[in-house]
Image 1 (cartoon, helix red, strand yellow):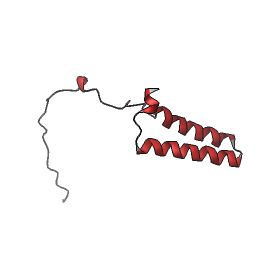
Image 2: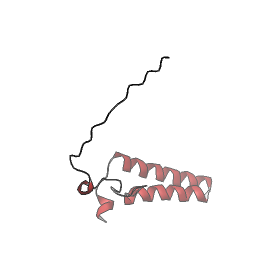
Image 3: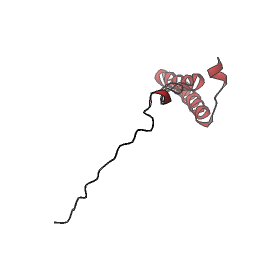
Length: 81
């Protein structure tokens, strides 16, 4: 319930609006698949899930390599022969 009520931003509202518009268009056109698609997009916005879920693509800072740098050597390539 906390996910539904908190964390609303512009993109989440936009997804909800577009999902509702798609569902309404499907109702007027009497197309079941369009209604399902609109409800799917609206449901994703309400529950704040997406391709990665809520913050599913975040990097875990505890598993990152800390301050480890390597020297990179570059070779100059001449393109004119």
